[in-house]
Image 1 (cartoon, rainbow, N blue to C red):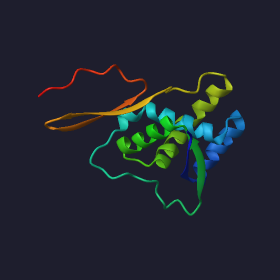
Image 2: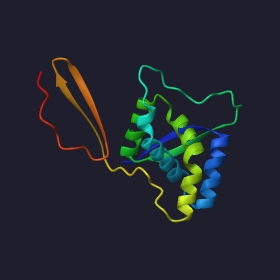
Image 3: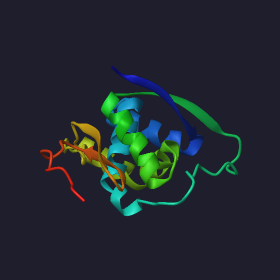
Image 4: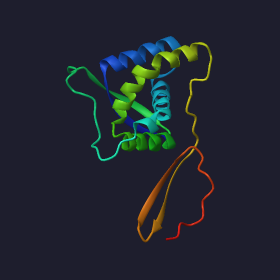
Length: 152
């Protein structure tokens, strides 16, 4: 079931996305999902712990827009995980991805290359409970077969 949500986007980011949509013929929703997926491929370099979630700076003037997006269930889970692991709002992740990946994605689309650099088809959350605590396991892509129970 699709999940409808909103992202808070500065007009500069929205302009970049809109221009790219016009040039490539890709819908806003699809391009936003593609940008967030590309950001996922770099997520391991941006993992943070012990910090609060960072949001976009509000000192860029009052030119902000609420953009409605629709994610598949697994995409919504991935993007929530990214938010928690990277300690950044999904809107901030999108703004950074638009500045870092958009030109290359539009070029690849124009040349009919694949623009989905991080294909995924599954998301699984599981846990292992031991005497020492609970270990949460998040799988992006198809998870490996279950391993034997951890014994302490």
